[in-house]
Length: 64
Image (cartoon, rainbow, N blue to C red; front, side, top):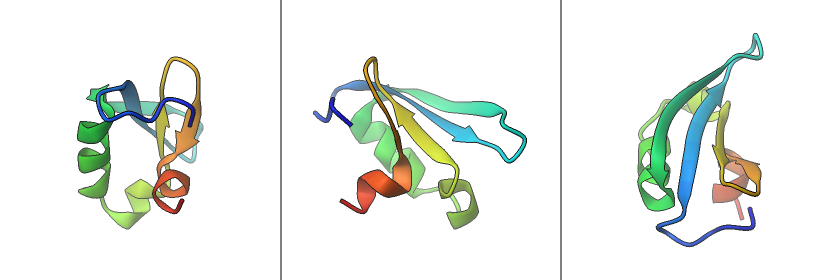
């Protein structure tokens, strides 16, 4: 994820098994990470963060 500062605006969304995306929030990266952390493990498996120039899976981001 190229844009990584705390106040970077991101879209936090869940990509379902059917390929549909559900947006959980738009806002600062720090808030999106807090919201993502509060989700169930099953939900976290399908979470992604998108900036204006990149997309990363939530679990990949926190594992680095």
